[in-house]
Image (cartoon, rainbow, N blue to C red; front, side, top):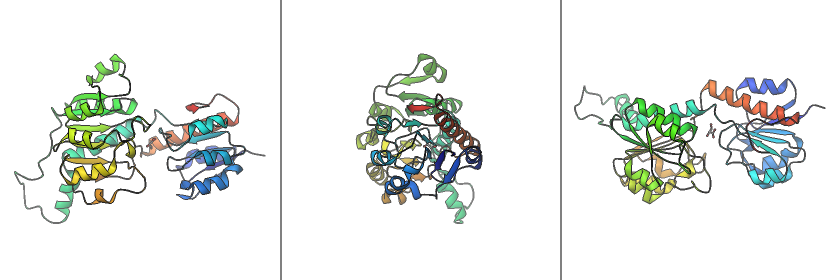
Length: 321
Ligand code: DGY
């Protein structure tokens, strides 16, 4: 009998077809497996799951699995999975690193530019019929050339953001759990600082590109926002919970910081109400890696990990085996 694979919801077609050629594939309905109860109820029927970051693969879910060999998460991050519980149950966990670096760095820069030059606000003004000719005082924003960019999380994506920022003439500072290789520092001419607080203090724009873990949860809290200051801009394409979202909403409403551009939220898909009426807040629905090219590559990496696990071969991109 063919192995049974659960793809928790519709994804780009090619990876689904690649799995269908060999396996018995079930594709869930969008959002259905965002609930622990649904995963728990069905997981025992599958040998592999291709999961999304919205699927809570908790200890309870893992305990309900009977023949599961691998959880292949269609994301670089895997904070939705209890990796320790999977390890104990001898279920491999794989992710899709590397291939989404450039798309996510592009999205980060799109948000950064939109916030610095107030594009959504200006566009809305025009669409509402207010444009009455060139205005010497109209929508004055922040010039990137000569501004300082603080990058929290100088991994692959952070470094790709830094490369783009160099092209815009920005000065680059960064903070990371460990200082990065000197060759990376010199390639993007980045200066290391000791803490997120110091990074915020010294940056005009603070960009978050770190993973979510115990050390980064709520790393951007009220004191850090105060350090960023009333002209400062926060850009987050990493994970919502790196920021204390309530403190951020308050900081925007009281002009503690100047603006925020957010692609990720603390408790997705819920968003703190007060962010919606903060005029200086740009929000997009977690689309950082959202290009056809990247989603295809992510899908194929997940397929390769599943095939390897089911063939008892070495699993590519395993984060816990
Ligand atoms: C990831 O890969 O972790 C992103 O957040 C989704 O592309």
